[in-house]
Image (tube, rainbow, N blue to C red; front, top):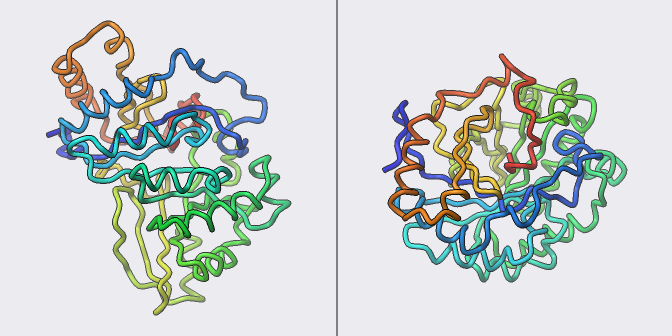
Length: 324
């Protein structure tokens, strides 16, 4: 239904419901950043429901709610409920820092969210605060609450940074093994001022894989989802780990996703700036057919790949604007 010029079928929409976040992870959002979108420019719940309905009509099957931090948006559970009820949507998931999961887990699960990706870069309280500017305890409590509510799988996303948290990898493996969580390691990306400043801590995950193979037996494994990770099982345990390598081994040839910002801009690639502004069409009274035609025309412009390595300072928007 939605096919780009390189034969890739687009079935996955990452939907940002806010560009705001209650954390300030130094590789994502500068501590001084205040240039957020105003709520009047956000897509309303009705507009989100209508737009996602048009994407679903074009073949989108999986929607992930992102931010910023999606749980800071008032009514996010209502938005989730509306999306999960749309014909054609088979999966609804959410990315979060988990600081508010203790409050929202129950209502999100009732609304139809089943899978969670949780950012957790450190289990050390002091280091966690240095990375995020926030406290670790509510995050760990949120993870426990989500597990009790029945979310599955719960994937822990750990951005690996040389000299920052690369000494915690084995500890994070033990933490996830004990709790039945999936663990994914992610390379830093030079998106926005913060991401470019953190470039000095970039560590190719091939180094981590080689290190883990000296201690563990890694068996190739499969994991349900629309993301780009390469998965392995740790020995004969139930723990599955994944490696997401946007820079050292880019996975652009299998890209099946596009991203919709909180202001209704459809971004075709995280590492490129080309986008389609859908909010003006909505508010000018465009028909559903006109919206679908505009989306199809945009997909026809989807680039073959990002240019993180060739142009590491090209993307000036913060990572929080699109949720990664």
